[in-house]
Length: 221
Image (cartoon, rainbow, N blue to C red; front, side):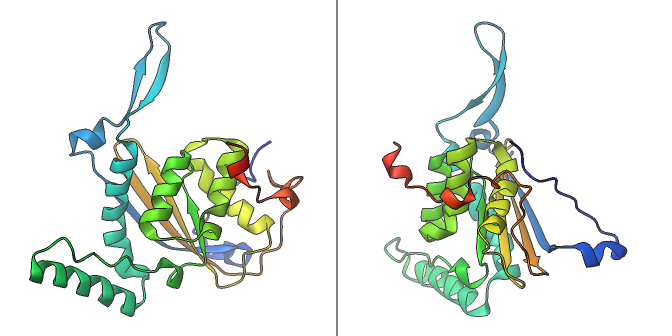
């Protein structure tokens, strides 16, 4: 099984073929921090086979990288009201010099209709869901991709986009936030806007099973 081929173009003559328009890309690298730099690394095992080791700090590291990424992305995508509420909460916290005053988490559902989160593990998805206060339906494409295909690293965001399309949920004008993580440590965001009426594609990795999703993963653990 495989995903549909992804073709990107910046040629004007290809505009009429496009399903999405890329609006923003924000790339955050935290390699200057030793904990971040060393949380994902390649090394050999006792049998001299190369593999990738992931630190227990991965959730905290990815969370910190995401916060920095959002600090750059937020002003580009969030409505003014959400930005003002966020800034006001920071000002209040500094003014009263107490951690009892929480920082407002912007409602990203005012900026996006769909979310494609790097499905590097259930803990990663749940951490993003919790920190951004997303709904269960917002992380459904990510959790179902992890359930069916496992950890397929950053390529998972394209399987998730395909899931949304296969479900018939993508509409003209919808906005999509893709969030991916990588060693280094890196957090990358891509913001797309749907520019056409997307019909479910019968040639994707979900073609034979989309009708059976979502599944209740709490019963499979």
